Amino acid sequence: MPFPNEETPGGQWNVDMEQVDRPIDPWNVDEYNMEDDRLDKWFETITGNCPLDDVYVFTTTKIEGVQPLLREIESSKGCFDPFLVSLGPYHHGKPELAGGNEIKLEMTNQFVQDSGRTIQYLFKEMVEALEHPRSYYPCSKFMEPFHDDLEKFHQMMFVDGCFIIQFIDCYFRNPVRLSKIFHVTKFVLHDLFLLENQLPFDVLKALMKLRFTGGEPEGVKLMYDFIQEHFLAANSLRKNSTKKHGSESESESLGDDHLHLLDLLHSQLTECTSRKRRSTAASLPQLASDWSSFRSAKELGMIGIYFEPSPTRHFTDVKFLPGLCSSELRLPRITIDDSTGSLLLNLVAYEATPGFQNDQVVTSFVIFMNALIDNPEDVQELRVKGILNNALGSDQDVSKLFNEISTGLVSYSHAFTGVKSLIENHYRNYYRRMIGEWRHTHFSRPWTTLAFIWGFVTLIQAVIETTKFFASSRLTQLD
Image (cartoon, rainbow, N blue to C red):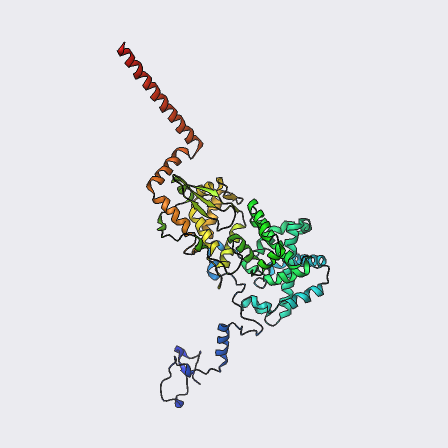
């Protein structure tokens, strides 16, 4: 049979030479046995049918794991693994997370009681609402425990889904009910937004219908409000949130486009309401730019570029406002604490997953901020302006954080092109740069301003005294 023999050295063909009187051409498709089982399995890996379980259905969007290249970066180690609870198949059954199972069961029990229905009914309704639930995850070693056990997979989805909804509902609406686990809520919040700890949003919506009086729309609105309050807490954003998601029907329609909770957070941070992301570069002027003269925050301030906080916390809300003598660079406010690095890296990892349709806004924003933050003085410059809220520690810690999480990242080529080009234009304008340096030298600090005013007043006094002296001398000569 003319088929490659994997055990034959040199990739030779195992062929009965008595049946042919010419050399076998390995590139000739006619030489293959198209009915061979090995070919069928290989074809299935391409067409999307998992060779290990025929219930898997091919979908273009799956809940992928973190790419190996990101995991191999030394500074990112430990940022992608849960502290307390496993959600979904990636970390299911790990011994070090066994303690979190008790918390999940407690929250699930609360979920059942609050729903007013039996657990048997809730489980049955969720199973009937889901079609091919395993297809949301790629066929990998993490799914092996569920290949032949769909019931076990459903049980995991039920407990993890009930836990997520109940925890967020209690945390956002009634924190007193979390009194027993109050000491670990910080770890749970960390684990909810890990890329490899995500549940399909369809699972959450199926359970929302059973849990809330307002059904799925009330549950989706809860998720939006929770993210707005916890991650985007600003007066302008709360007003926008009320306006944008005030209608439960609007929240329901917006929820249809999200793959999981991390995707929902990503959409809020980047102002994208669908996985089919719009191009952020399209709204920016595409100017040619030699980016070699880009400087850190402190150095930009020295040439007349000053910083102000943007009205929102969206990562796309980066604007440059050129002026006659000085310019203004607006950046979104960011709170930096011990969970920021992990959160940003998981958003970056999500943008790096296969099939992600976006301009990699978070990745580009992290790289942009790293370019501004070169040392603690840059952090101080942004902190004084109200852009960075340092809840991590020293300014050195914040500078180190951005330097570490941006290691190995590649920015989308057109991200923030307009802003970068305008900064470059300001830098190349000799007169604007000189005026900026003069203002920074004499008016950047209160004491330098006072010294300049004192020197100016002294100069004026000297001129007046000199004028009086010459005037009196002239009068004396005339007499």
